[in-house]
Length: 186
Length: 153
Image (cartoon, rainbow over all chains, first blue to last red; front, side, top):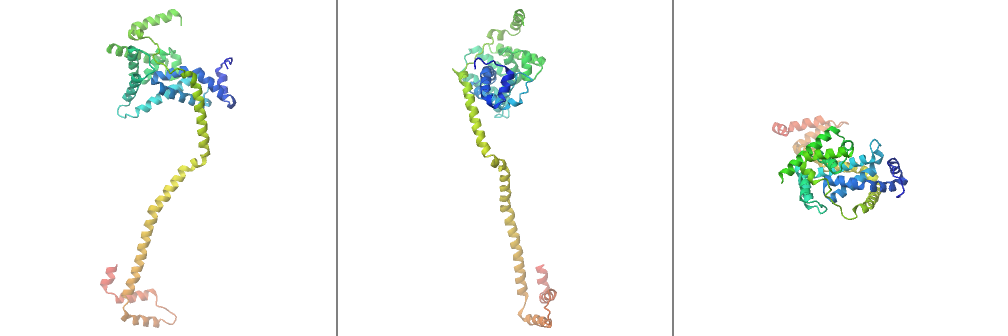
């Protein structure tokens, strides 16, 4: 398996055939699990919930491979699924508080940071995470993908289906808000 | 992007966001040991479980398909039994009671002293003809008082 040349086109083809599907899926998971995990983790913060969402993401990929048209890369397609799954997960938290749904998500995320055992950051990094939590959903996504994942605006544009210009503005606003929060919490 | 370009952007960022620049973009999150090593196996098991569940679901397929219609039919029959049938019984009973009471009333009104007249009437008609309904009614009306007639109706 180590000698197998990983070609995205071949991988997709093998995923669509019954005989080779299982092995191809194993390769797919091995190839993308870490990148997808960290992307989801930055949205959800909690490891156990991230694990659930990551599994759901790959399950969706397994069932939906016929729908993959090859217009974008396989990674972009998977990233989109992962983003949607993570947001859907958070939106379920919203429904518990009909009067202030956004606050419900903030509370859940802040609790996740406070109680998360798999967090090795110091006090200031915790402050940074709190600042990011307070951003609107889209700005959070853009900030994480640009600042932590160092993705190009064009890649982010394909995943979030937003123009590069709007993304740049979104990132700029996110940075300003975070700076303000860090300054005020000193 | 060239190194010089990157350095220039970083310098600009430091001016724009000094707090963020000091913190950096190091990932503060960790995972349990061996998490990624065992994740693929976990996924395979999950897929196998899903396949098993799908097989069970497909066996029940036809029943599941018709379940909503059967439920609807059961509700309709239940409603029919609970509402329509008892109501019909009550309505029929009232009619029967009305008929019985009507016959009893007729019998009560039929005074024995007038019976002979009635019999005579029938004898007059005994050449093959029985008194018809209107003749009987005429007899009853004649023997009933106005009060009795109007009170009944």
